[in-house]
Length: 181
Image (cartoon, rainbow, N blue to C red; front, side, top):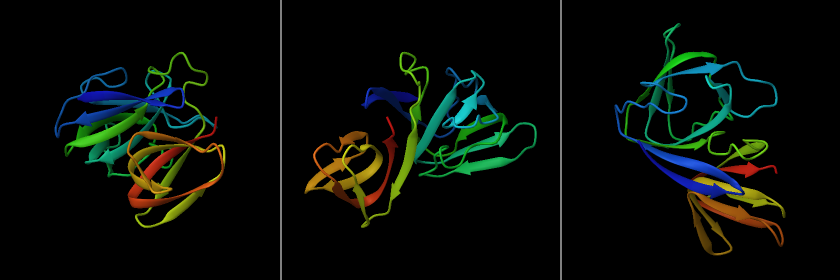
């Protein structure tokens, strides 16, 4: 796994590159196995075996998660985000079935922040569609490309709407987070 860190309105996001079949061991995963606890009301993402919430977004590739107790298999495709589709509780084995890119909002990387993960809204804009963002919006482009006032904004970029509402047109399918802080 390769990892690059990106600033995100005072927080840090990690973009991770996985090779197909790679075995992962990090703060929440040991030899590709990790635990998800029942979600807590009002808390973004899923709770890991560390007792902390994580938010994940799959930018490219494909991942599978097999529940080690029930055998249930979840296949995650590009655009999957656990803000929208939370994982059920249980122990899971992770498999990167294709070379993949994941963006992770980790409480470990944001330990000095309160909250460690802010209130986020997931945004998806289809290619050719437009979206209007009011003044004060903090949009983080996770994947894709937007045209804003004739300027191209690509993946892993912050857009803080400061002087007036903006309309953005997606040049290709675009995903992002709106920070509610």
